Image 1: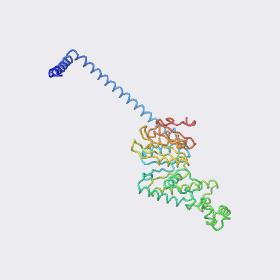
Image 2: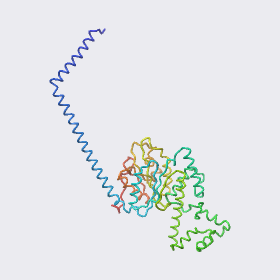
Image 3: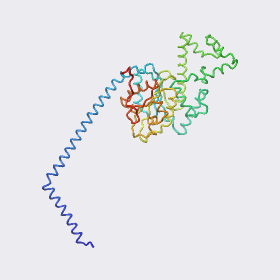
Image 4: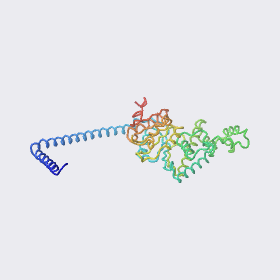
Length: 385
């Protein structure tokens, strides 16, 4: 049985050991311990200073490289997209700075940015008012382009298809029901009185500028334009189609804008873009919306044009909130849509015109700093080396 004397001895031993430690620390071992601690602190301080100096030097080199890339960028891409029409689509949450810098570089590459569209959150919102706006927009699009829209399509599908017409290349048959008089429905409408002679009437109207406007012929404004401009038939046909495609593209975007789904500005002809640059949202872990519907819209655009999705994302961002990772993870999309994941930096921005040019030529690639990227930068065409 442990008694009081055992506890007394234990307490005495503890105080004795403490006293011995104090005596030794203040006496023979004082210098050794102090010197050791001092040298360790000095060494750690020197290491920290060296690391800070290395970091500053690395940051200075990186800044110099970025400045050089920014300065040489316009020369490197000059003429790369000469004669090409490109559309830009900014998704909700996309950086305004990235949009403007990307647009500037496309213009420096010689492209014409035919239209610039920024989608509103209502484009995919599940709130009842937003869904009502989409249904109303789809109803107006069905009324304008009934014969060209898929039967039984949902409001979202109708809007996506129409967006593709406005921002990419329109089919020749588009406009049968919009009153412009050049779609497949015209022959039926114009040939009601005498279906068997509709082709003859069309030929007669084409050859006779002053023919009756009720005949199934070209738009009277087109005939007037042909007479006034004195153009060759081939050139006139191209200009006429471009003008009508532009008119329809603006009509589509105006319908969508009037229903609060997007905002747009146009500096060129719509409906004939060879490429579309999509600016992805700035994604933070857990903060970005589900991007599934954006991926579906991109797939719709890719049916008619070369699509490049650009953005700035990190490895930690979840797949369901990372549009670029979603595109790369989708076997169907990754083979048709190009991506750049570091567009906020000068190297990523400089890659945009090269990737767009390759896409217009039928080549698809994924570039940037993420593990899912195939390479850091696209191959430079031989003529540009």
